[in-house]
Length: 90
Image (cartoon, rainbow, N blue to C red; front, side, top):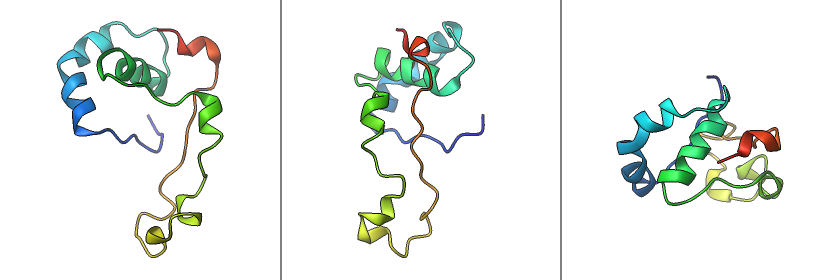
């Protein structure tokens, strides 16, 4: 793993955590971000954004959210969409 990380709500975590073992046993790819997304969709009660939705996300949140202007998190966030349609199977 070497990606930027993921942010989850407490509710999504509450729903997913009891099923983490099942998610790990039923992996279809070696792409951890895709597999986490599959687990979120299956057990978290929501889904990650589709690649076309990711194109609408700003690369640097500070450019549109002024509260981030002097924040120590500036430059630490990035969007990372699935690379291949075939990795998105349920």
